[in-house]
Length: 254
Image 1 (cartoon, rainbow, N blue to C red):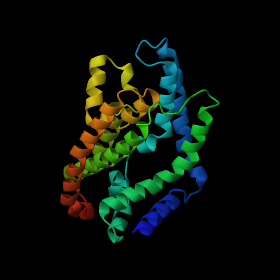
Image 2: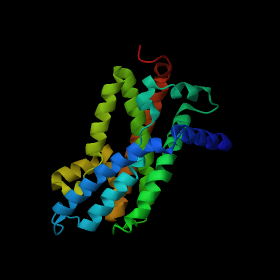
Image 3: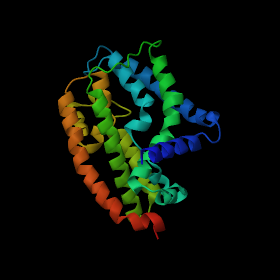
Image 4: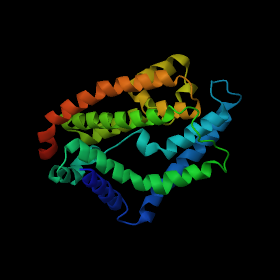
């Protein structure tokens, strides 16, 4: 089963670059064009750190958020199942559906990790951005973030199947995850009451959790406990709903 998992990841990674490495360039450029203005805005707003986060922290937070974007808000191909035959291939493999989807997603994100994230990480030091985590708890937090991201994606996939409007659920998911996960704006820049609310809701245990440990490193224990709590809440629900939606996954929304 281990060799089958590795082969599934390799196949998905090769399919991602079937049209050549240059086909990934527009997405890379779009990320850079979004990251650079955001860094300039934060440089202007940071001032002397009145909002509880200084300029180096803002820079490392923003740089890492674009560097790890695919992993901080996991999106599987189930979000586009209605227009993709990849789902039917999963049922032909000698492994469970959820495992197959997870492996496919990892394989599809490997080219971006190697061709975009790694070079971007190496470029951070010449630009004076320190990506060294302030706390070693960043690594288990990132793992918990990825696990929770898969659970959240499965829940939205089940919601799309139930409501029969996949495109609407996709748009809502993108908007909610961008705003509520902290991948775009650090919660430290928000008013205190709003920051506490956003940290406590489930999306706050996605991007904001590992990024805050990378840039700040404080309250690591509380962050990990909250991530574990939301994983324990979301994964059983996702597994039950995915099992109940199995027939709809094959036959579609009709």
